[in-house]
Length: 480
Image (cartoon, rainbow, N blue to C red; front, side, top):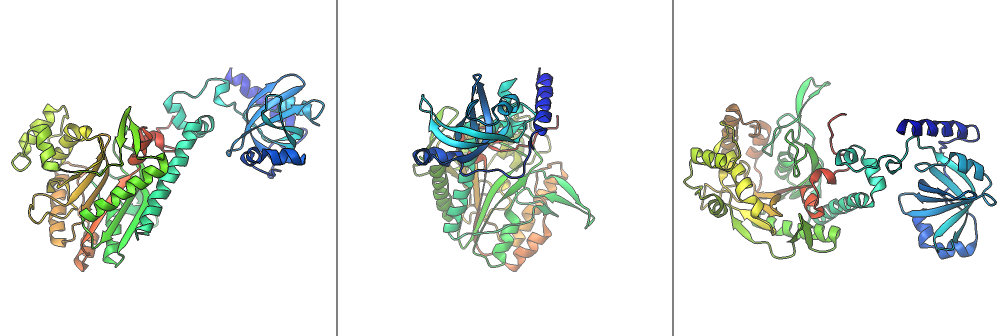
């Protein structure tokens, strides 16, 4: 059936070519469809001829009159073609189809049913569509087809189109709020000799001109910290991150992340900033500070409490992290059905257990603070409790939606932690961090006491109540 439709469209294309160009470079358009709809009374009263253009979404052929629903991205309007009014009515009847882009010139009027319309004096094709829009022959319902042909998903589903309008608003508000707080927006390299700043496996690539292997960045952190060494007080970046790990409702391989760093501040200062940042962005996108996720309400408007990591861990697992051995943690992970690999270090075991046992129960927005040093190789130790660090994780709707620290700026301590990470890598932990001599060199020149923070587009997915992959315009897909 589809093959028949494609052949018929190809014939109509050839027929139209005999009388005109189906792909002209210029379009006569006096206004957008939204502008005409908004100022309809003015256009109707003037009785002047106006040229409009857009994609034909549907056609109703009633013999001597044809009604076309048209969209140009700003709104919808109706074009009306009449045999006694439209100069090239027969051409319209024989060659125009849903999916085509058309330009029409005429006067605006209201139909008997009160529908705002354009009565076409003349019309022409400005793009001939060689394939039918999906609803004409099979629909576009399964998620894989929708994501693979996202342009059709957006075209046919107003809700999807609106999602990405909101996503632009979301990042614009994050950017504006940060700048208002005194942060300078910067750009740092995507390719790195040593990937750092996060526990993740990187993508590897080769630079032909330098004949050197590089990695796609897994974080924005280390270059931004170097800028604090350079003398900038507050910096932030919105940029793409690349992590060669699994796909699920919360994870992607490439996504947008925001990270910011502030000199002369600690994690308490950063918690105040981020709570305001989130509330501002959510209010801008949703219109309120209450959202829904999985059928349950999340209230972002209350003051966010601070909960201790050690206390939560013991409450949900029965293990005291001050005393728990690696073997005890390994057995707990197995009990929880996690199937941990034998080479996982203590820190990784703590992290996966917490994500399984405690994190899903954290529904209302909160800060989890004072994490064990085992899971935080870039955070500053607490002076009164050196086995803990000055770190916070923002939790809501059973997941993590942000992460911040008082930043480690002691180059000797940092080297020791990097060396421990390298030991874990040697034992098989692919996500353990690498020792970065260039970053250590920068720290040796001195980085001021600082706080840092990172958030990804997972937050947007949560407030939209969608899997993160569905909030990306063109998510990476396996080739057909």
